[in-house]
Amino acid sequence: MYNNEYLESHVMTAPPHQLHLMVVGGAIRHAIAGKEALQEKNYEQSHLALSKSREFITELLAGLDDERAPEMIESLRALFAFAYKNLAQADIEHKPELVDNAIRVLELHKETWLELIEKLPEEHQASSGPSKQFLGKLV
Image: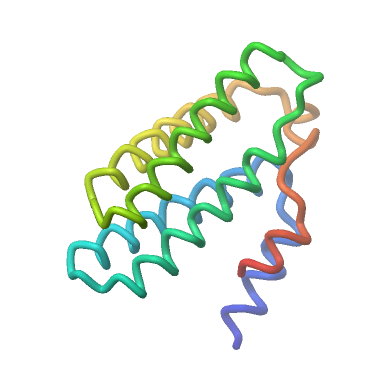
């Protein structure tokens, strides 16, 4: 109970660039849990974890703003769609190696995002990100 209250408070006060990292981290965390469950042949648990990871990726896709750097946004959309598709196929075909494809894409995005945050001036870090209502539902 206390952890949920702390997490909810953290989410509601985090700047958008940190919220984005939380969503990416959630997608990775649930993908890893799904892969582990697949390896253990626990298909019910893998389905739940992989579905949760796909929810996070859906939020990442929904947060893309076509008005800003359309070419980069299209590349991100393709990467997130690739990760989503691999998680869905892994869920259906019970193939952990497909989850690895999604995890690699998400981890690379996370590393790139962290580098970008370091280079951005403070005023640009508060621009846009995942909806706090969505994050509140997932915590």
